[in-house]
Length: 125
Image 1 (tube, rainbow, N blue to C red):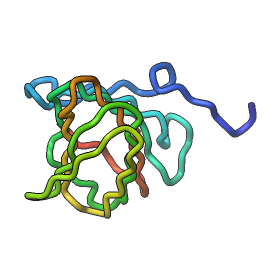
Image 2 (image 1 turned 60 degrees about the vertical axis):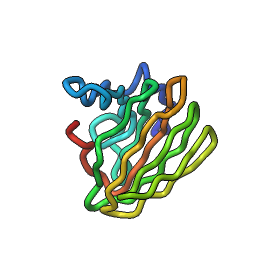
Image 3 (image 1 turned 45 degrees about the vertical axis):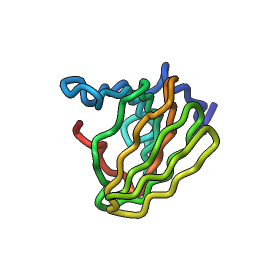
Image 4 (image 1 turned 180 degrees about the vertical axis):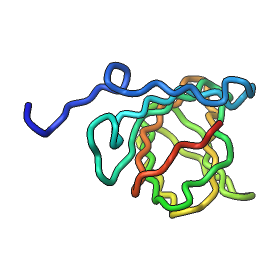
């Protein structure tokens, strides 16, 4: 195929395991779209899998807006002292620079597709 790409996160994505040294914050990230992988000029996107009880660190993307789509599982999204429950099929919009945290409160893995623009780095943990 020419310039269009059909991608499979487990095969085509870059595997990035975050939080391995911090119990409760481990997660599997498959970055699938970025400049290096597909020559994306504006978007970074991928899939993160959280096991039950696991969470992201509280983080932000200082110069990027983020959209998340839950394709499996459930949990809560934290912003400061506020918590909002989500489940499969939910979409989340996180404005530029807003600190947030995803937590899997369910009994099965949480699969979260994320994308943000302009491009930036993932949290370090």
